[in-house]
Length: 318
Ligand SMILES: [Zn+2]
Ligand SMILES: [Zn+2]
Image 1: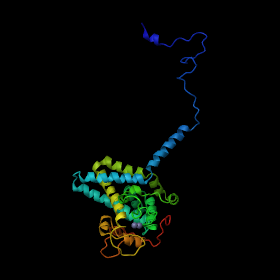
Image 2 (image 1 turned 45 degrees about the vertical axis):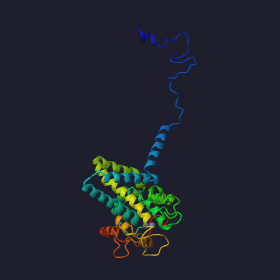
Image 3 (image 1 turned 120 degrees about the vertical axis):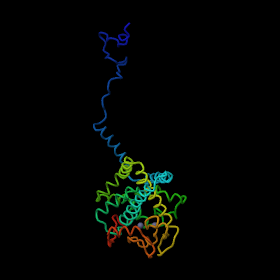
Image 4 (image 1 turned 90 degrees about the horizontal axis):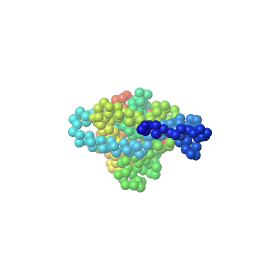
């Protein structure tokens, strides 16, 4: 018996009006429905999806907090990895690159306070080192930092632990900082700075691309050349913002709780001379007494950069 023949659909009867595959009601489940969606629907859907993906690349406090936690774990893994001292030298160089050149000299003294003049190549170097340090884009970080100076230890200060409604340890998590202060002003400034606009828009794409490129070369290069230095920069910068408003001595009477803390100055490239800095925020050198050692200021001097007399950061006071 030929089963194939048995499976054939019944032949259409003469005089029948039903088409092939139609059921008794005349509906054909195999027939394509007419496209009632307006033209360009797929393109709009794709653009919406791309915009959502691009949204993931933007800087945000929770994402920076997540990187802080992940790189903190990386520091612990590295500590127990038994790696040779060569890799720790790479980590120290990375910490100098992201923490000193990027964060202290670039983000803090140049972008936030404009305390010295920098040619384009130096500005690009600061942007590169600071951006990959994962604390946020240069101008967003600067806006947040200037808010800290304008409202030190008062309501609206993004760093303060004095008015913190939650446990103090949360002041050490960068996810609690808000890098998007004064969005309107930031957008206005970014409109005139194409490089900074690009860095802001594709922030985590740039950072992720750099980390993956190092990973493709050697996983130890990614761990000791990026994750460990970034972990140190993020945790020590948060510790610096907390401790230098709690412990230490004062050279100046200021209206906030800023203090000078010698061990934090050694640990974080001179940033520990915080009372000196709050008293003279436009000064590129945080040193006041001869023994107050400021490595960040030495880097500026070695680079041959001159102090800025017109101390006007873009966007003005926050
Ligand atoms: Zn401060
Ligand atoms: Zn400052």
